[in-house]
Length: 351
Image (cartoon, rainbow, N blue to C red):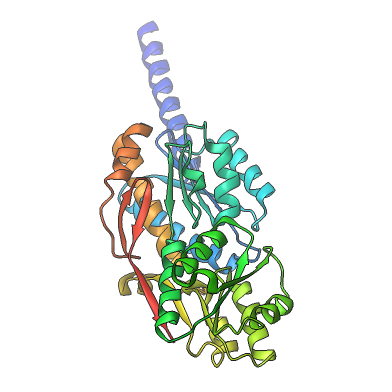
């Protein structure tokens, strides 16, 4: 009798264990993180002046996440919208590290690259930032830079204007590090024939600066701000009927800019990424985004991060070695990381 009772209790116990296990498995939300989850923070602008780019980034990052999941690599993305506000960028970085416990951060634009970068210098977190500035690399062996070379790009644009016979050139320089990088490139071509007026990020009226520049008989003006800065520059050129050509970084010339200022853009010269691969364009064609570049860049680097952490079982030194040896990719012309700086194919576009 006792033996029979023990058998019954044992059977009941097994059933209970199976039920508990089943409940745990089926009640856990799909996509939730586990101990093997690679959690990546993304700090970008989703509702501010650069939201046209940040929304593109979100699309590319989500596509990378799905592709990684399809390969069995469990990735969780945590997005932070900082609206180009340095204070919000710092808060976002602190939250991602201290609360979300991310293993890597992908941050965009100079305000986040610098402020988040300063916080991350002594943190055991892989950091890739998408911006022109190089200062965040200093003192942080875990940091990597991606995006175009603004000094070289502006130098090439200025050289094209020089070849056209333009003797004097103007630069509308945003008061941020990438503005200085561009100016340095222009000065290598034009020297003392470079005339400069500055502005702060968020300024919308460039009429005074532009009129001052035209007093120096400039034949072209270069401004490498964001989409809104290009719009505000072209607006003055059109309203004042100024006979000058425009130079910028290609990703500021969005469909909205082309639609509004196609006539003013005639003769413009810009530097930019090579065209995003046709296959990638097809994959995101259903998404309503202003530019494919942010999506392609985010996709490329989120894939690299996910694959590196998966291969290295979260050992950061191994992850960095994998990043250093990252293979070339034609999604947006990634060549390699050299001294923690992404080498990307670049083109000069004349309209």
